[in-house]
Each structure stands twice: as C-alpha cells, then as structure tokens.
Amino acid sequence: MKLQDLKNSLGQLEEVTFVLPNGGYVPPHFHVTEVGKSSKHYVDCGGTVRTEEVVTFQLWSANDYDHRIQPKKILDIIGIAEETLGLENLEVEVEYQSDTIGRYGLSDEDGRFVLTTTQTDCLAKDKCGIPEESVTIPMVSSSNCGPDSGCC
Image (cartoon, rainbow, N blue to C red; front, side, top):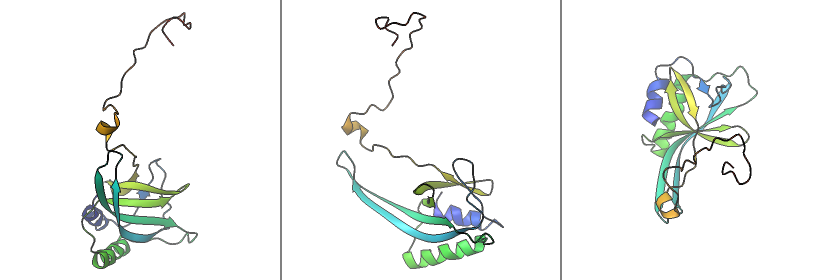
C-alpha cells in the first residue's frame, strides 16, 4: 500500500484496526510512535548496486488501555512527517513489536489494515546459479521400500 492509499483509507474510517498476519489484532490502544522515510543503499550478492525507499510507520502498544487513536490524529502525524521529511507517495512498511521488531507490508481489506508478511530473497539468482523453478523429484510407489529399491 502506498502512502496516499493509506491516507485515503484513513479519511473514510471512524476507528482504526490493524490485523496481524496470523489473524490476531494489534491491541486497540496502540500508538503511532513514528512516521518516517527509510532509505536502503546496498550491493546484492551479484554485485548490483540497489536502492530502496519506503515510508515507515511504527506501531507500539503501552499499558494505557483507554487510549484510542483516531484516524484524524494519524493523518495529522502523517501530515507533519510529509511536511518535515518531504515524504513521497512510497510504499508503506509497518514496524511492530513481536519477538523482535517485525517489518510488514500493509493492505486495506474491508476497512481494516492488514499487516502482510515480507520475505527475504536472492536478487541475483541468475548470477548465483539458483534455478528459477524448483525441480520436482518423482515419487516412486512401493510397498517394499529398501535401501536398493530406489524409493528412498
């Protein structure tokens, strides 16, 4: 989800709900502790120089159970970050505490924001010798599976 999509969705809501990838929920008393811009400049394993930029959005839950942040307040925080940091309409990445700080993508599903899982990947598979498609090993059906039978 891009920043403008997030702002448009927030503008249509009366309350904000974040759903975790496992189907659980971020507690409703969460805080938005940061809105920022994160830049990554790196070299992949094939030697290609790459850059990435995302808008970061950090959620945090405290013990103030009566706290409920309203969509307007989140829009105000985003507005300050846009003005101060010159945020562009970049992809939004959400940071949320689990065993460690998790980094998630974001989607809007029926007025709820869903934290989506992200994955690592090799960006230079062609240079690393990693096949694009996985090889399927045929299954051998046998009721007498022994070391010389070819089934194991």
